[in-house]
Length: 245
Image (cartoon, rainbow, N blue to C red; front, side, top):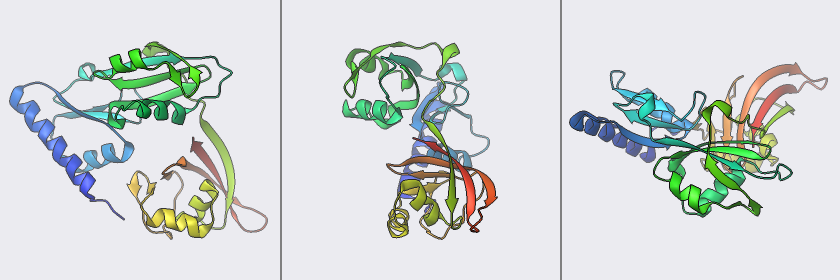
């Protein structure tokens, strides 16, 4: 299991730099947006006494900024609303792909909440004007872009509730079912460090999952093993899964 990668060490160094600079100039400094692994890693490795706060623009955010010497109101985060005709089935990946296609860096965009005909994107303050002026379409779908109200955030519609049957709770068995691949190909994904368990890269195909585990498979999405439902008539395990598409 790779928990001390070069990327992690570089991120930690940047966080220490932000804390040191904030203390020296007496003003907040910010890092991110961070993904779930990055924010968890920093929480575990930065000193408990450090004057830091994590925030993503709203209470239940997944992608978070680190603010050194910052209060919640200091974070340079802007919520933007994109509206479109609700008959078009747009999803998180469509919005993210269009933004990345414009050259916007992933760490400048936080959570993207999508529902029918409407999405709210949390963006870093310095890229918000670019999104407002440049985004006219998501894929081939025309959108109108403006500022969003935090009191009226959409409830995401891209969570799929599943009940699946597994031979075991081994990671390769779960990945094979989730990604609709053979066990050999699933093991290859795991070996190639494209699978995370609870936001940490896991390279052991035989790793045993537990109830509540979050499995993220690059290009396939995030899966939460939300419940163990007992055995089927054939002795296999029935589990409930939330798929964040």
